[in-house]
Amino acid sequence: MAPSTAEAARRGSYVYAKMITTTSNIEGIGAEDRVYFAWESSKPLRINVSDPVTGQVTLAEAGNVTVNNNSESKVVTIKATITKSGIGGLQVGNVVTYTSDLVAKTATFVNESTGQSASGEAIYANIGSTSR
Image 1 (cartoon, helix red, strand yellow):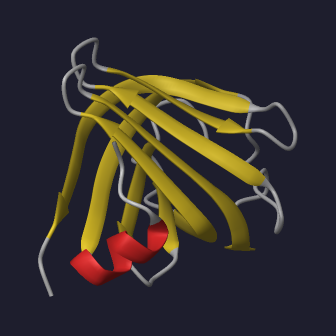
Image 2: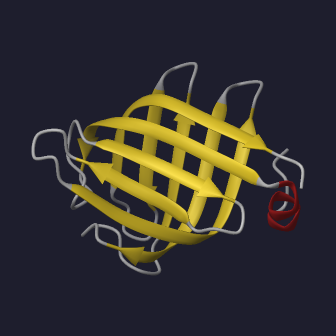
């Protein structure tokens, strides 16, 4: 079971995840883009979209982060609310969910506020905590 937000802050939790998209209808995220998710307790979730063809990098940040990690099935879910965005399809206030299945090597990134989504290959998802 994932720690509460207060517990995560006390323990110094972190999440780093990456996917490569195969399909997307989220404006600003295209096929073959690299999408990185990075979160450390008491900091916003950073979403970094890198286009390997143009080299362009766009960023978004999100708060109210919850992380669920089922280490048995290797499924990681991150849910957050966008607070700043340079990505057209992610507007402030949108609720987004990223889910990766490291066994199946699949990942989905959904803007729950618009129904738009991106899917592709889960490259990695590292979750951990350090005692403070």
